[in-house]
Length: 320
Image (cartoon, rainbow, N blue to C red):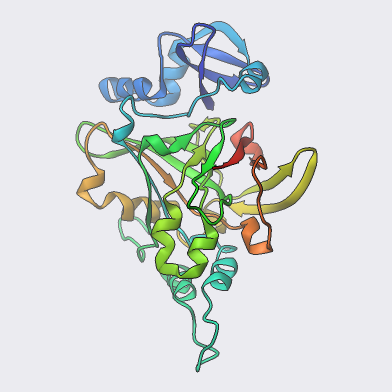
């Protein structure tokens, strides 16, 4: 099951379940956040509640996309109560490009591993959570609060002081903390964990600065189980021209850390278990155009697709 939040003709928020080229309206539910509160009150699953509230009313999907009426698939009514975070070096294809950025120009020990490769190796050897036994903790970073995220169709803004603004195609986990302080995962969405790779390349200790950029997730929220193997396509388009395109793999089968381990190490902090808060956690990328020498330009369009996740996540770049 995949659901979408959108604005109707009266500019009010609604929720719809995806059915091919239409959305079936979830009656009486104005947001996925409100739907989650009903989960906490009733003990029913998201899927069951959606089915209960489904109406016969439908909405054509494509006009909502064309008119930028698709909203974030999950947002807190108070943006200051959303945490946008992520983890890196989590995918089997992610280490090479990061290592290239962080390699020392000169080294008396040519075979010495960079800190990035050391971290990646730790994940390969012990990044899986088995039952209640956690694996090694991953790299972790903070992106911002609900003010720094945009829906599909809206621009990702690169600030005047930025050196670069590049895409990072990945999955995001979407959560609300329940009244008892336990994280409740609503589902998964496509994510573009937009970052400043040139700044990070200067020195990996600038990673924290490089991550303080807007990001995007959506347009759809996958409520059902996530397949272990997912194959996606990340593209950069300049007008009608594709300037870069690459396939990527994600899902637990293609990750050095499994998702359960990433969730454990994020939510082990009491700070991140405050009832009612929303968390959007990016699980890491496997490819990035910057590693292939691509220089993005104002107006370029990032497009990220995984068929099982529904419609693509599309965001133009706006450089200030």
